[in-house]
Image (cartoon, rainbow, N blue to C red; front, side, top):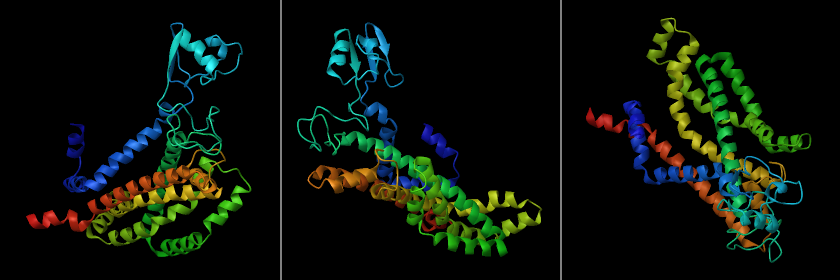
Length: 354
């Protein structure tokens, strides 16, 4: 019902594009699988955590994910933060209550001190994908890594798209010296070695999520400028744009209402591939050691674990399969969006009706 209401608010052209995307079964199912993976990663604390979701002790309910409780709350001897994986404390709680655990009883940085062999250990009933060389659960780190990579790529893609579309629209609509000097600046800016800049900056600052996002945003916004600029150069000479200009409509309204809608059609088909590039960029930087701080769960760190521990093939296989599945889904979604916005397919039904 909600989907039908949403479709009714779309224009007939956009409804046709949505139907074209749905008819591409590979892209349609890839979208749902990706959304499922993304939803699981967003709920990482509820799926993989070293703390129980709910604790019932002596008739009272406690929520360790929201608040830290001392051991004395559950009959312990020390006023330190409760370690619910400790067998002594777990026995005290289960004697007078119960604990509801997540599916995976390990967080991203939780070390399994009960391993029966040196880490990294192979997959087992307790550690589904094994442990890395520090004894951390690989499955938990994969879930947290996916959330970090997807959110990072999403923010970077949206941010670079906004900046790139604005710059391309201004250059294409106004043209002249603004376009000339803008193109020369972009040529120089894109010629800067991004990796070397990151290496230099990493020696000055300690790169984190937002620092790394800002640095990559400085270089990634140029990807859409040429595409939007070309569309705006073509659209500014169309009759309805010239008519709006002759009627005295302000330039900002002409760009927003008449020029940008044409440019955004080509831009939307490019966004999934920008998203894929952002994921691989963060993975490569983490693998080389110039990305997130050490210890942060990331796909690049997982790849580095596989490279360092060749005697533990499950680490390399996990890293390969995680990246392969994620990037394949994104590419299939991108192909579906591209085909849905292809003028040859969206205009074909109208030409047949005419």
